[in-house]
Amino acid sequence: MIRSSENHTVGGGVCVSIGFDTLHESIAAAKQAERVADVIEIRLDSMAEPRIAPFMDAIATPLLFTNRPDWEGGLFSGEEEERIGLLQEAVRAGAPFVDIELRADRSLRKRILDDARGAGNTRIIISWHDFSGTPSVRDLERVFQDQFESGAHVGKIVCMAHSHEDVLKVLNLQFPAAEADFPLIAFSMGRAGVISRAATLELGGFMTYAALDIGKITAPGQLSVSNLRLILDAIADS
Image (cartoon, rainbow, N blue to C red; front, top):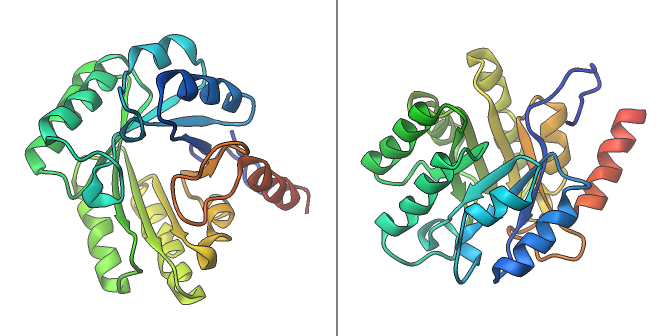
C-alpha cells in the first residue's frame, strides 16, 4: 500500500491498468504487474474474449474488473446485459473491486450493488469520466453527490484537464469526500493532469492509476508505473 507523509495507509494505492487483446497477454502482463501494483485493473473491454476465472486463479494481487462501454471512453460496444453480466460474474467470483459507471442504467447499477451486498467481498467503484474537458465546480459537486448517494463503496471522478485550474477543481473534491468519509478516486487526464495522478494520493485520494512500462496506456496522460513510483518515492523521502 502507498503511505502518505503522515504515515497512514491511503486507500488502494497504485492501480496498474492492464488493457491487452488476448487472455494470454493480459495474464502475463498482470503477473508482471504484481511486483509493482497494489491493485491490478483488468480492462475486460480491451479483450476479444473476456473472462474472469483465469485472472482470479492466476493473480494474488487484488483485482479490479472494468468493462468500460464506448459511450464512456471504453471499447465495449455490445449489449448492456452482456457487459453487466461479466461484472456480475466478477462480483460472484469474489473480486476485490468492480467498476460500474454512474451513467449506467440505475437498475443495472442496483443489480451490481445487490450482488456485492450478497457476496460480501467486493467493493463497488461507481465511476464518472469526461474525456473532453472539466465541468464547472458546481457540476462536479453534483456528480460527487450522486456518487455518494448511489450506494457506491468508492467513487471515481476523472476529467480531461486543459489547464491547472481544471486540475484543481478535480483535486478539490477530496475535501467534501473527507468530510463525508467517502473514499474517492479523483484526478485529471491529459498533459496538464499528469501531476494530479501522484498528488491525489497525498491529498487523501483512494487510488491512482498507472500503466505497465511495456504496456499500453488506457487513458490520456497515464504515467508508467515505474515513473509514478519514482515520484511517490521522492515525495515520501522529502
